[in-house]
Image (tube, rainbow, N blue to C red; front, side, top):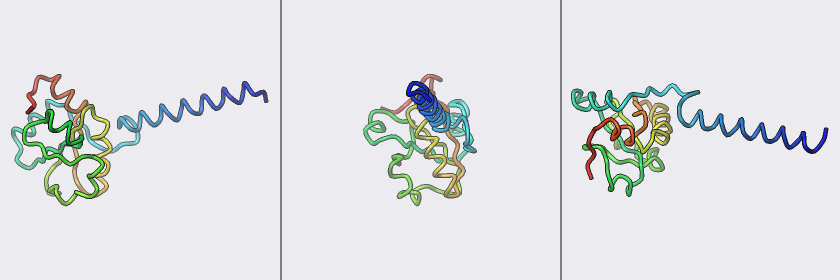
Length: 134
């Protein structure tokens, strides 16, 4: 086998790994997390008192803008702060674009919560015409 063929094989392995990771991180494959649209999240927040709205972005992102009545628990601190979230409620989880909230939803699900991931995060929320608190 030539060196060129070896490099081609390595290239395809690396590309397949990166694509697989991206698809998994977005929750498109290998995820049992339920996702909802910003409109569904908005309706649930307005009509269901048995919901917690969880923002898993950084404190600076939260300070610049967030959905009203959201609770901030950054993704990197989520496992240490699960006791701050009511397990008897559905948890609507959002981040900036939907990647971190998929990870957070997996953590929550593994710990007995019922998470609902907001598709496209706060970007999708704003693009749907809903307000944020600044």
